[in-house]
Length: 69
Image (cartoon, rainbow, N blue to C red; front, top):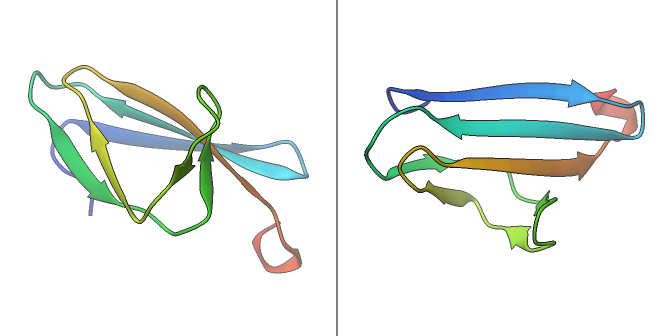
């Protein structure tokens, strides 16, 4: 479950999945994510917990596998 005010949209290009994670609140929000995601802005690897700043946005990616296409 996502915290109130947090939205995740998923898009793919056939090779990778892209997750657009947006916090539409003025509060810090924390959410759980699957392992293996990379931040497209700074190149960091994201752990299983993501902290979003107030009004924050993160763009994450993960390579697609046969089972996730």
